[in-house]
Image (tube, rainbow, N blue to C red; front, top):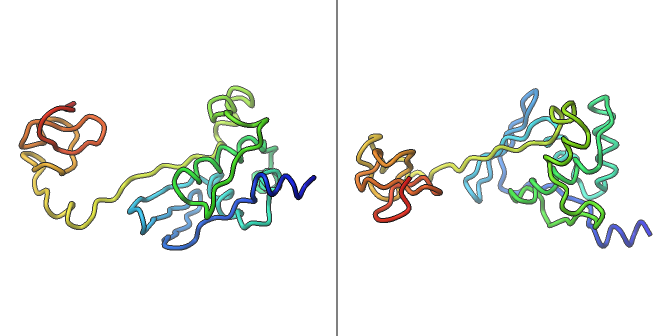
Length: 175
């Protein structure tokens, strides 16, 4: 049965290629050279990522985190971390949740396990780093050309800061 479950839900393996990793006391910073994204993993998410070596199941990772954090750590929270790691392409191959855990969210876990669990819940913050050409070509904060980062319409020469991409554009989609 264990082997059948592992085939259905492969054991997670952290991606290590083309990443620059800096470990800090309470978090781990990862710069992805392929996507030019920087990820900040809190202590819990970092522990999950560091221990995804292809030999541990989500249940094993929950047990390991329980020991390291000094309190019970639910397997459901490991799956939330694995989902985020997969979303940001920090796992070598996709993993899928077992059917009984499908659809559980971070918010539902906090409701189930209480506010104390919120502090130890895995979290990943990500930013996209501009390419050198993008960073060099935008100049001052006002009157930026199309394609430059912006936070309001007044930042752009066109008067249009796209409301979801936060870049200057001509035409619709302004804030």
